[in-house]
Image 1 (cartoon, rainbow, N blue to C red):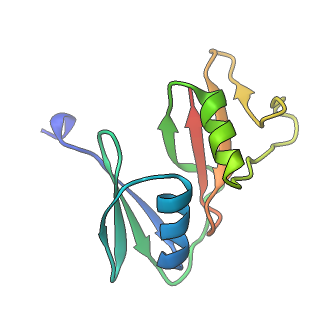
Image 2 (cartoon, rainbow, N blue to C red):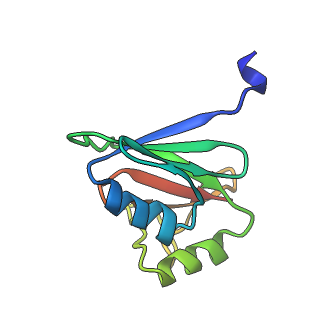
Length: 122
């Protein structure tokens, strides 16, 4: 049954070297396998396959996200490594770019080198 199977996330990129620097070096995801067509990174309970494509058509929504225990600390850690957090007009984000949803979830968005929107939430 799929409800007990490990989920695998996919994201398309145009340059695997840039993606390895971003997802591996910058975000800190351990690399399990590399090249020639994809990078495979391990996360706590899933696998992320970063696949080389000829052209990325960035979606107007989040394609990949992580639930974290301490959003402020993770935003600060990534910002300190050069990640720029995305601001959206009219959303009422705080100084770090964190938005608090009506239900209390806190979310921050950022983009990878190909413009894919990624998020952190607590």
